[in-house]
Amino acid sequence: MFIRCIKKITLIFSIAFVIVPSLSAAESLRVLAYGDSNTWGWVPTAEGYPTVRYSDRQRWSGVLETALGKSATVVNNGLVGRTTDLNALNAVGAVAGADFNGQRNLAEAVASSMPLDWVVIMLGTNDLQVSHQRKPVDIAKVAFNMAEQIRTMSMPLYSKYPAPKVLIVAPPAFGDTSKTPLSGLFSVGEKPSEELGKAFNKISKDHKQVMWLDAGKVIKTDGVDGIHLTAKAHEQLGKAIGAVLSKY
Image 1 (spheres, one colour):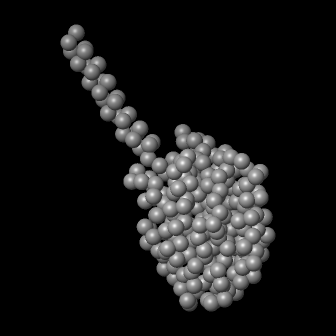
Image 2 (cartoon, rainbow, N blue to C red):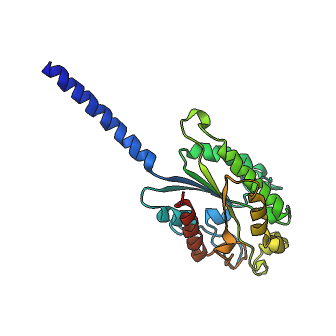
């Protein structure tokens, strides 16, 4: 009898020992940052390009990770040139034109990053390039449709994980794009970019379950090229996003 009790106690202890670590892992917050060069961390330069990348801690995704606390992990999935759902006209090196289509690669990015509590999407800047010249309201529609796609992704690829919550970030208006060679791509988008916040606000009314943030109310596009953010703007944006996510 004594031996049986010892065996039962040992079994219970063993089960508890196995379960506790998995509960701790489940409590850590995981976020996917999905965006373009301003998520990747492009450092603006007077030459326009080539460039380098801000460090992990300097990028807004890294600032967000710090703001959320020690147990948080923010997965950075930023791609230079990424649009909402448009293919680039040409490949850039080994990156095919279709690979710049953010919606095309969204499900794979989410599924491969699971488990996730949040996905933060900041896209739309490249939709305003001279080769696309998309209307801000159409950019907003696609961005919110991407959010709705994510909200259906419960138990992706045979996993047990629920669909994450989504925060859409409307990009800030362009700055002065005339100072670098990037002006050839983006100068046509300066005026339309000023309407992004208003357009996202309008479309958000049809997507009550999706949260959004107007980055233009938090930061200015302050890089010398008028398209990319300084380290200071990354810091401000990361903290602002952190404040939103921390409420839910």
